[in-house]
Amino acid sequence: MKTVEIPPKGLVVHLKAYGFVKVFRIVSKDGDTQHWVTDVQEMDESKREDLAKKSWKIEEYHRGIKQFCGVEKCQARKEESQRAHIMFSLRAFLRLELQRVKNGISWFESAMKIRRVAVTEYLDNPLYTLN
Image 1 (tube, rainbow, N blue to C red):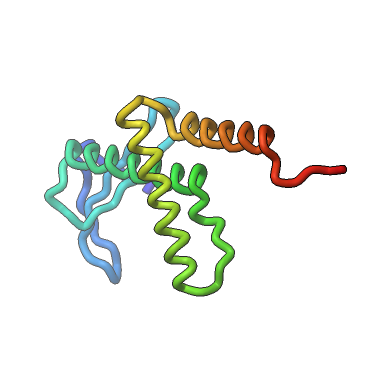
Image 2: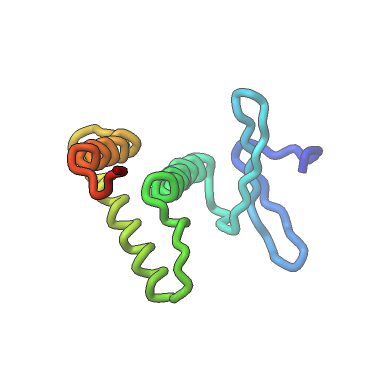
């Protein structure tokens, strides 16, 4: 792929055991190269850019639901418990996203605010004390 000249509009090539695909080469400002491959041969650069923006939003969502809602930290073995954990994580993420959209508060700020309130309330009224 490094030696093949790929025009900005993409290049249609044949992959053995797959068929025809269209390849795009994207070179970032720092010189890193990525290749996008699609079986939609009519795709143009503007459509690819639009899909790249959408896919980046999906990546941000996955990072957010993992980092702030603990979706991957489920230790349950039963399928029903795992589904419940995923659904509650999704619900928590939607609440964080709603705060972001309505009030301009980032996911991080919302999560920290929840933790601060919880810690403050516990310190004001501890459940357990050391005597």
